[in-house]
Image (tube, rainbow, N blue to C red; front, side, top):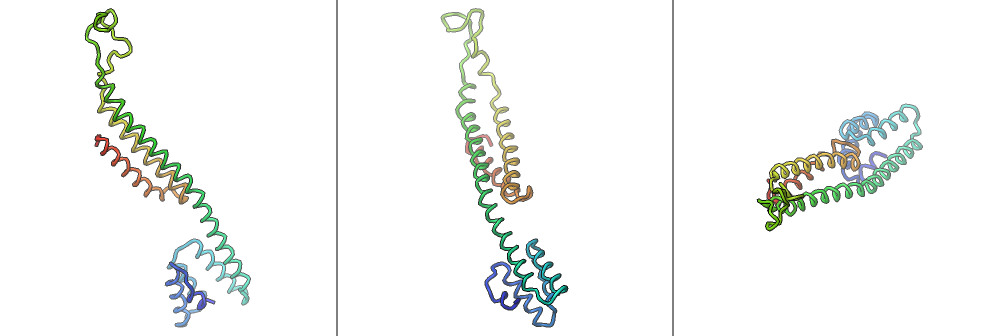
Length: 203
């Protein structure tokens, strides 16, 4: 059975299974060759299958039903992972779109709103001829030109960086099932953040 499997196309496992066949051809028993395969591959699915087959070999000489069970379990696991990946892809798209929307809002505020407020004209006198209110008060526009635009720019940049880190970690948890797998998403989102602020002119 191992020889027949080694002659088929197993993609990434082809070389390791062919090495297992060579171990058997050179005198190793099947259980030892399978244990070596498990140590080389270090895959949870392969480890479960090898353990199941090895125990069946020690318990009985008829391992056909056990092999069918192991094959069905591996096929079901692979199918579930594929379905999960397809479902989680939707959530990854939502995370990236929401991040782009966040960057778009920041860009709109930075490019249009803050410069307009910063350059707002504040009346210097309170006469009615100048359009101000009596007593030197200019109403709701009083002091709008005194905002610290640089402070807002820094705040937006730090908020975008925090959003990139958090969104990336959540994307890794949803997409691959581990927060550590979200590091690549964090790197991508941080790169997009730097690129966006470079275009805006804040970095």
